[in-house]
Image (cartoon, rainbow, N blue to C red; front, side, top):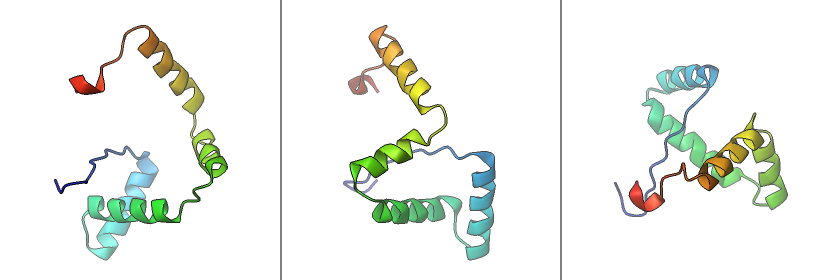
Length: 85
């Protein structure tokens, strides 16, 4: 991996995965290549205003419950240190 590159795994809902596959086939590129390009464009165009970021996060279904679960698991010691990954 190139220096400074971060690997990120993203899970898409089935409908988005299908749309990505159709788009990639239409432009004759690998799905990962297209996904990387689309994500980069979205990040470049994202509003850096913290309120906008909060709105995006709040729109994720179940995000509050998952954050609370993660906090509970970490507090209970059911977490893995980043150094141990």
